[in-house]
View 1 (cartoon, rainbow, N blue to C red):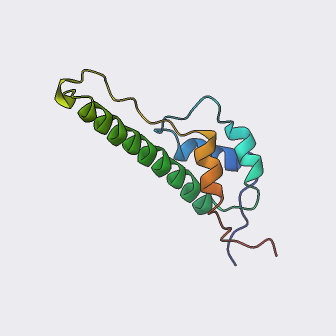
View 2: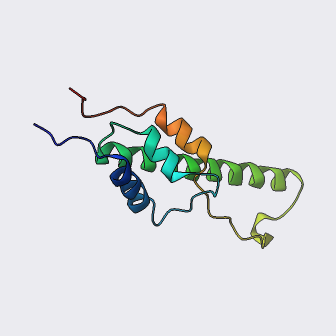
Length: 109
């Protein structure tokens, strides 16, 4: 039999551990997120976090490509751009979207 899914405090600790090196928007409440993810295994939580991080990165890349196109259309030189690239933050929206794909790998039965 597989071990039962982690409880509230362990879920919160797993989320903090998985996301420790990831920039997270201040709007994200990990305590609340841990409560909403009742019944998910540690591996499930990791997958949700990784998917949210990938969404943030993908969104950042898409914005960057769009900005490059706008600069090129305006006749600007992208190489002359001295703006520093912002580090993509994982937002509440990224977690919400990621959770749409989430499935529990362990049943409550």
